[in-house]
Length: 127
Image (tube, rainbow, N blue to C red; front, side, top):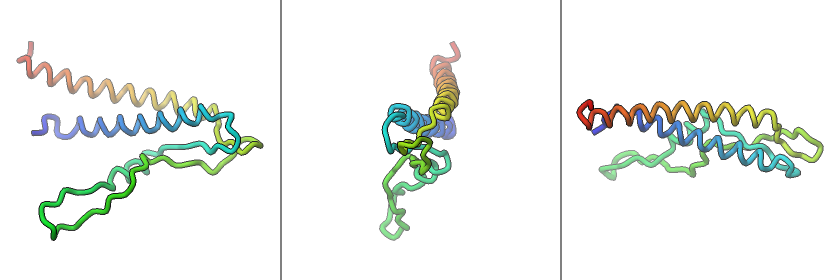
């Protein structure tokens, strides 16, 4: 039984994306002084494509199988270097991405919290 029509599942996927983006940005900031380090990015489009690559449940061996591929969480490395030592991290860009991702994450948490509060109200009978 799906109480919210898949909205909690969608919000969960959004939180997974935000966590992957947070991890990439944190890695970039941690390696800002590492020579030759290439900045990692997480794009929503590639994250969505990777999420679509999953094994489908087959009830019959004649059903079409879907190939399962490694899940990379949409993470890609940037080929650009911003400094002479080959480091590709732009600290201003990373801080802006961190702030943007935090706002996105907080909005998702607020929305999923609202969904759970609605469910709790229903369970308590509106009290």
